[in-house]
Amino acid sequence: MEGHELARVQRVLDSGWVTTAGEEITALEKEFERMTRCAAVALANGTSALHLAVKLVGVRDGAEVVVPTLTFAAAANAVVYENGRPVFLDSSPSDWGLDANLLEEFLDRRARENRLPKAVIVVHLFGQCADLDPILEVCRKHEVPLIEDAAECLGATYKGKFAGALGDIGVYSFNGNKVITGGGGGMLVSPQADWVAKARFWSTQARDADPEGLRNYVHSEVGYNYRMSNVLAAIVLAQLEVLEKRVQQRRTVAFRYRDGFADLPGITLMPQAPDRFHTNWLSCFLIDATQFGMSAADLIRFLDAANVEARPVWRPMHLQKAYRQYECIGGRIAEDLHRRGVCLPSSSCLTEEQQQFVIARVREAHFKAKGRK
Ligand SMILES: *Cc1c(COP(=O)(O)O)cnc(C)c1O
Image (cartoon, rainbow, N blue to C red; front, side):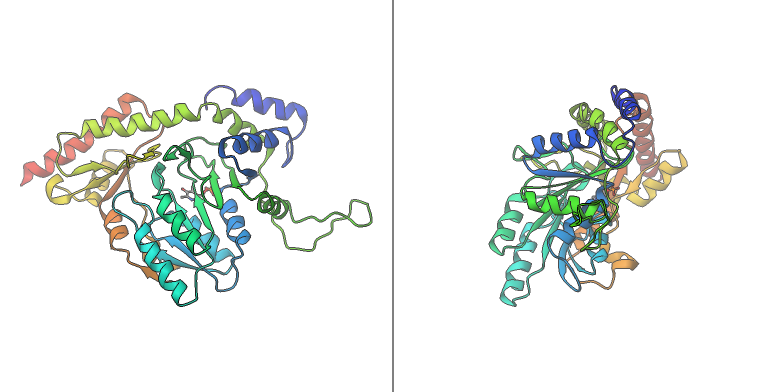
């Protein structure tokens, strides 16, 4: 929290609009419409936004949707909520995002077989966009809608363009672990205003106008309670004022780690594609076990014992029990990134002193491991 959160929440409490409607929600949507030049609807969280995105593109029984296998589970879950089938694709080692060449091969082949997937979901991992131009080009060629899961990369850009606003639908999250937060909350954006209107309709229990002119609850479709709270919207609005600062803080953390490990072999910061602005939402490093002296898994255990919370890079979906039954194209790159990747403490409230402690422990791990040999 930074500055105006409390004042904005106080205003909501004073107004009595402690509900899923109110001025703060409208103002937050307006802000996103300004930033993304899309229509926007504020939702309960990123996962509900993904669910409605999948529903908007028409996924239902058995429809296939391309999802990168290296991802947080929410994108794959959303497909299954609508009884769709994810088809997992491998990542590119150059940015860890969906492999554009593999996607092109896959969609070209599926077009020849006359069984194109219903949609492609691209997930922008750890604060950096996947390579959107070739991904968009092949999706356009085959008229397959592209959903951007931009939950981890608010504030990132691709060739100067706002991440999450380049495909047919974009999804953001304000979960407690993201760059800015409302303690929850999400946003769905799209250049197609009618889609956003439909998502808004579904998110508020799919209530139709009452033909009798009373206030009857009239439903022609099944709806959801997916709307954002006005209280959360107030917090997120105040947080948006410091989005750039938060992004700079995350980047500072990542580059301080990088500099702190500059003389160590076998530990390298996640690639930073030159045509993209990477927020480094998480500071991720790849470990070469031979050079570093210790595997990523052993480093995580070592840090754990020193009271430092580190984590592996996402475990690929095709290795998860819940998703093993689905097709996966490739997967070796994702498996390698998972096996060798480490996410270090990355919060914007991490003090320099705390971070120096983490850096010292990583250095200690390396020198101990090497000293034993
Ligand atoms: C956090 C996250 C989500 C889910 O957002 P919630 O607001 O937590 O539901 C979806 N996708 C990715 C890639 C995420 O990191």
